[in-house]
Amino acid sequence: MQKGFINLKDKNIYKPLSLTKDMQFFNTSDTTQRASFKEALLEGQAPNYGLWMVNRDEVPKLPHSILKGMGNMRYSEIALHVLNPFLDMDIPKTKLEEMLHDAYDERIIPTSIQQVDKRRNIMWLTEGPTYSFKDYAARFFGRALSYFLTIDGLQRVVLTATSGDTGGAVSDALHRLPNVHVVVFYPEGEISGEQRRQMTTLKNNVFAFAVNGDFNTCQDLSKKLLADKRFAERVFGDKDRFTSANSISLGRLLPQVVYPFFGYSRIDAGGRPMIASVPSGNFGDIMGTVIAREMGLPISKIVCGVNENREFVDFMKTGKYKVEKTKSNPSSAMNVNHPSNLARLVSFYDGQMVDIRGEDGSMIEAGHINKMPDLNEMNADIFAVSISDATTYRTMKRVYDGHGIILEPHGAVGWAAFEAYHGCKDAALIYETADPGKFPKEVKKATGVLPETPPKIKQQATMQERTYRISSEPEITKKGSVSSKEQAEEAKQKIAKLFS
Image: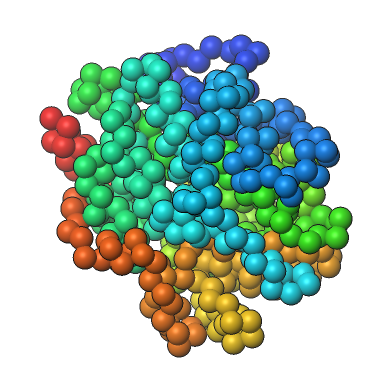
């Protein structure tokens, strides 16, 4: 048995997954295990803390005729062409079309492409219900989950860790669904008040927990609970009651394949490939863009901009993956020292990355490389760069002074990352992932201008909050913070009380 793998038969934790020709997603921790999209969505996290992933050789290719016709399609129509090949075994095409039309109603979630100059274009993924690119994945995730739960008469508790925007988007998308409860873990004091209130003011079936620790602590805590089938059985009488809405969920990943197609369809690329510049935290948007390129979207280079949490940048340069303590940056949603989706990216390039854990789920080694990916090919496809806080603020000011455009810190990382890339002269699509009004202090500090507050955030500022707290201390390791045994026990006690 490879280092870091639990013997699933001995543990008898997970139900066996049958292998059939219809199951196209594999477990990054054990590539012999396969699941349908439905199974992967309901399970959330694959056995042994793995992620469900599509095999690179099985990624569907979109015909050139469809790509060429996307300029005349609405977002939901493009989404249907992109997602149906992945989902047609689980969701009838007519139902998927209905689902996507509802999820991406342009009156609720419009997508804007702003041409800045001959080369640079900004894709504003910021105009949905929670003013974040997370809305795109969350709205599809919520509808797909509700569809499967309804037809099978099931219920789920959706566990979500957030570094800022995911929690609000998932909470909004799943709010008041009759067969779903949402438990969100957020790092206390490390997200903006605007982001926090998008979770804490909804109430009903949404329960927001402030966690003593950083995002990595929250993410680790969520993964531990997802893997604890005995706890789910004890509290709910259903060992499969928990699922995930983080980007570890396949239902969150696949929708992120869509917006690069939409962006390309709306820019003037002169018939040439484009450069996609992507600010990256947990790497769902990067992984989605990599899959889009594999489907046939003409992308000459994917620029991966991270903040001062530069583990991936160093890995791309040296081949050594070393997780350091999480650094706090103005691009707070990207304060991630060990991106979950990196395991998917490594697998895509013929490698394998796993987290080595003990019997109780405690982290022993984050991001152990069982098999090195093809780093030469990764570097050929992806340019990775770390953007300092000082550069982030300078970029926000320069873009405002030079173009009259207000970027928030994450979009500024995307812009600065593109500027750092000195490759081909193709047109660039820069992802702007959050409304500047969610980060007023940072925008004012950089530009001297206070951004306009979005309407729903104004409303939530006056609403009463409901917050729970995990106050136990996290476990501090040489490589940063992870959830402690005490935190896991405290979380289980409080969740059990909520549902008793």
